[in-house]
Amino acid sequence: MLCASTITTVIVLDCRAAKTKVNALSQAIASDDTSKSLLMIAAGGLLSGLLTPLTPQLIDKFTGGSGNLRMALVAVPFAVLVFFVVRRCSANPVWAALLAGIVTMVAFVCAVNAAIFIDAQAYGASKIMRNVLAGLAGGFVGSGLMALAIALLPAGPRDPALWMRMLLTGTLAGTLMAVDSALDLDLTSVLYPVWQVAVAVRLAMVLQRGKSG
Image (cartoon, rainbow, N blue to C red; front, top):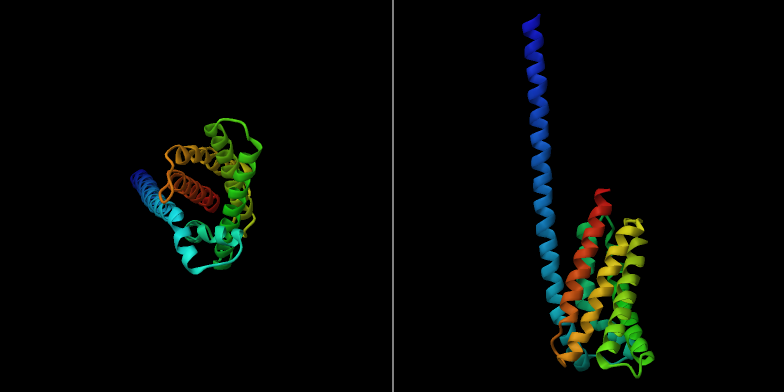
């Protein structure tokens, strides 16, 4: 009887150890997949950020329409990235991901208009200060509208603390507008690649946290 009891105990302990190893391995694989996913999203943000300042040249050749519509089309590369991020990192349906892409285009228009408004209000300040303030305003409005809209999607996380991180990231990254202005960049940009990488990665992290929670 004692021998049988001992054998049973050893088997139970071995099963528990095996289960622990399997769980640890699963977590390691999941962590590796998450890292690869975030790296791919960052690469997508870099690509969309490089394409964004080039897009107006293409739009001028094929499109008329209002200024806001043309401005919204400039955001198409980043909107496409947001669509894939929402689909890959959350349980939202296709229509919700499409809506997130459209919201991204609207947020871009609002961000640009907010930056222009603040720049006008800061008339008289130094050029670099105006650009920093305008960039902060644009970054805040753009990331804020995206966060609010995507949070309201069917599978959007409802935790405000998660979205505040994305809002802070987007706001601070907006200050790079001053760098673009100081370097007098036109067809290239520091702001767009950095902002879009940072916001896309932060969005993916928020959605993944919400999905796992």
